Length: 398
Ligand code: ADP
Ligand code: MG
Image 1 (cartoon, rainbow, N blue to C red):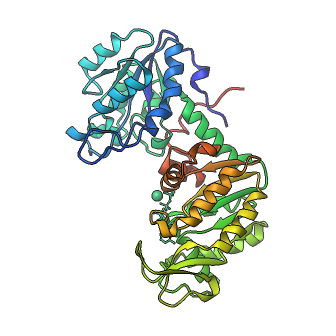
Image 2: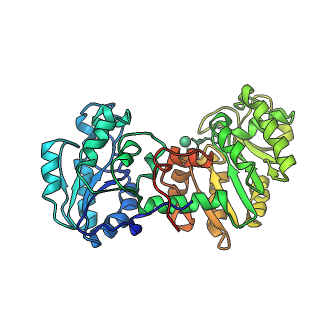
Image 3: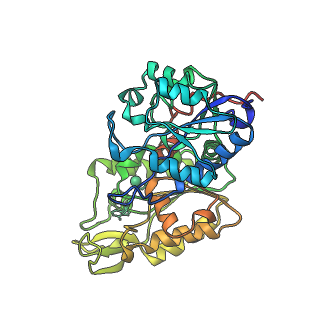
């Protein structure tokens, strides 16, 4: 179901409480922002609302201050950068509610911006507290959620707030829902899902949801070892989650039952130990040495996966194929990213924090149709769950 967006709202001359995700990383021990992606992501909605002559009361969390004021987690450096990128100064207050904030909000002219302090300085935020939500709501006429990456949290500025103000999705949120939602609900077929990452236990719910929807499932990363074990192969010293072997068996069975083609690696890169500079070799999956650890998919698998991927019209990818943080074991992940980036006749969608990071490091973010900004939120979405910040946004009426 499509959600009402800012474009459906009459915002001219109104005060808009805009919840965004400005949870940016900083260079260690500085107030220098290390990665501005999240700031850039909120610019389209801000520019749209300004152009429509709304006054903007922008709010976000930053880090995990656990309900207390933490000096290093103030939003001032973010306010400064955001103002510079919009090309206008932004008023920044050091609180989220109360008389000072009330007055600052009242004094905003159409098109002006105010940034509130880190929402998580208030313990009420993470408790989804109604009074806190009401106090935030009293600052504005309309609420816009453009914080997909925080929408898996039932927090006051995400969930409870929608009780008190008419709510709309922002433009980044709209894109997330459209791209992830279409991939799950109404994809161009064949639909392929590529799954990897460290642990199968993190991904069980995603696997269980996707196996009902996809035409092809490609499995790499650390979780492949559990599937090998489920098939009776030896995996040496690779991490296998014994309690998940049954899950892997179940997924293999469901794939067969649902007519899903499930592709597992045919060769892997193994190391003598789990270390960046460990001696390593490519081996067939039937010949994994007894003390070796799987650290990446092998070159035959890269070709096998790439061939299968090229026959898909939609591809969803979550989870690196190997320990991509270590150069020697980054090739599988790089090959999958490059194959996706080259597929002009398919819709390519990337979810998950580490996977998005890998794609960004390879400079391929813009070559994908969509790289989700929401790490944990994108995973919960792929699990098919209702997210507390999304189910509360009203549907479009058409
Ligand atoms: P995402 O955040 O995109 O959902 P995950 O957090 O599930 O992805 O997985 C990312 C991690 O998986 C990376 O840190 C990567 O090093 C690790 N990983 C990938 N393949 C392996 C492997 N074979 N053994 C151990 N760790 C792996
Ligand atoms: Mg992760």
